[in-house]
Image (cartoon, rainbow, N blue to C red; front, top):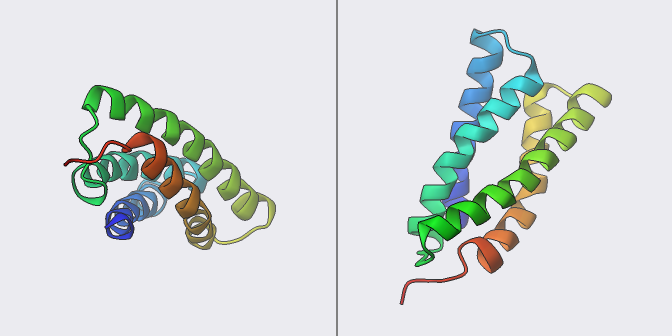
Amino acid sequence: MYLGAGGIATACHYATTIVAVEVFGAAPLVGSVCGFMVGAVTKYFLNYFYAFESAERHSSAVVKFALSLALLFALNAAFFYLLNTVLGLHYMVAQVITTLLLIPPGYVVSRVWVFATARP
């Protein structure tokens, strides 16, 4: 379920990134950041209700999720910058690699901390 929720959130992230860059002419890093935010909102609700079936109060889960996203947001920007700007990879190749690198830490933080309280 986590991978499915992540897949949907990633599709939203990528679609937003592509539209921002290709349609609106945004810089790839700006597109990636915008995409990350859209994917994050999608991911929260899918993880809360489906992947982890959390009973955590939203007031607590949202704060924890926001804190975990702050870390993942910084890692996304750093990895993307390194891959796209420093190494010169195409922005979508850089984004796919960045996404793959963020799956394991994202899962662990979500399972152990953000959505730890499961529904009975």
